[in-house]
Image (cartoon, rainbow, N blue to C red):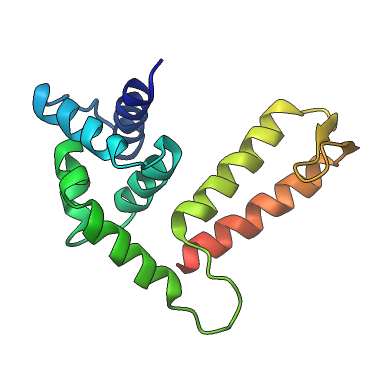
Length: 151
């Protein structure tokens, strides 16, 4: 698949995941908007990360992300809004966004599903195979969900 197709498929998948209804693709308008965004040098994963963030926030300009063409049109506003939102932190530690926590929650859920009998898993930073008890994954999931609820 091309980046164009990957982005459209990813947007449609996320739309259905967040709103519970299939996205009604807007034909040439949506297709042209996707091409314009990717032609500007934006990577597919970067764009989909912002889609996730936009779908979990409320108000202007996030509401514009309800259509693919609207999302692309609101891209500069969404970038600015997310940058400001992520900079707000009561400490000097790196702020964690809702979509980043959501990504971590999904990763932990995948680990739990993939290793139901305490099998080993691949450590992200070293690619070493390490045994991680299932209870450890469950504890991490509970911590992430608690953090997510506080945002």
